[in-house]
Length: 80
Image (cartoon, rainbow, N blue to C red):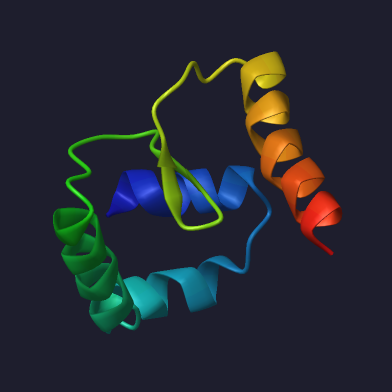
């Protein structure tokens, strides 16, 4: 926990609140929900990207991701 609080300090977060939230497991249900969603989506690691609810299987470089977002946007514009 000390490392996480140190990182929070470096990021200039409210470290008292951060430490309290860690201690109280304030976001445990949200993390559990994310784990369940990942399991249902066959996500086994990070990063994993979803675009319009569809898993992106291509490269993760910025140009590939931009194109992956532009394609559905263009198709939506045509359909409208």
